[in-house]
Image (cartoon, rainbow, N blue to C red):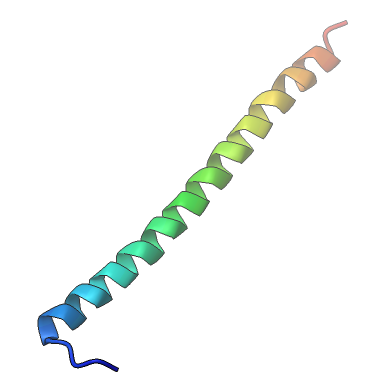
Length: 52
């Protein structure tokens, strides 16, 4: 491992966790949008199913 100053180690640590949290939020957001879109498409089908 190269010799880094303590400030650089702290910045690398923060950068790593920011990247992890960003990816987690992006995955959560994409799944939230996906399920919301699925519920929006399935709810009119349920309403139209009994519209006779």
